[in-house]
Length: 115
Length: 114
Image 1: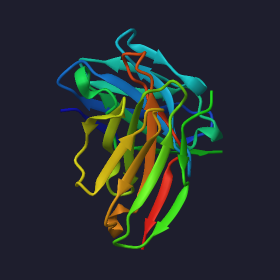
Image 2 (image 1 turned 30 degrees about the horizontal axis):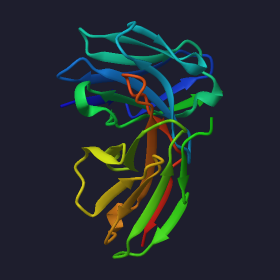
Image 3 (image 1 turned 180 degrees about the horizontal axis):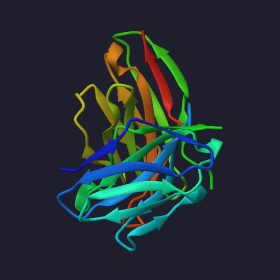
Image 4 (image 1 turned 45 degrees about the vertical axis):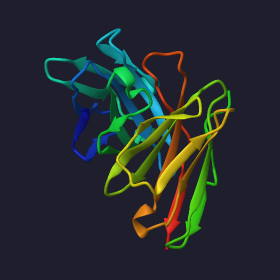
């Protein structure tokens, strides 16, 4: 079975500061990992994905994440926060095999950006 | 390409009623998944349909059901609504052409049960 743990339900940073959102996963098979962002009253938007091609993954809006198998982690970072980054972020895992369209999500991290 | 669309966007129902939500996937996508999002339980997988067949199912009671049509559009139905069914219901579609099955989400249907 797969599971995802996001450390910190709320993260607050100043504009221009580093953003670090933590995600640890548990999977019995090599996982596919994703980060999504959700703005108020909207659906989820895919930020980036890990599919075993490269351990450092670059996504949209300046975000990137590094897959570390030894630490079972897939933390999301952005060098310089912008006010528009304020949203809720979700880490998700999909096991291989027949799980196809089933994602298991973490509980989410709300990012607040202060001017 | 147009994104995933969901109708209606907002819905208010009374306990005991039933409701049907609709989802139109991105053109060419044959897989449709449904999720329930609540403040307490977060995002939970309901089921996935591919080529009109349910391929995966989450841990929800039988009151929750779905179907997919030949044009890949999908509906989900909740019968005998309970207050706890109040949630944002999200639909996601994915292309079977990519092994990672990245999912693209619609804006959701906000269901309120009174």
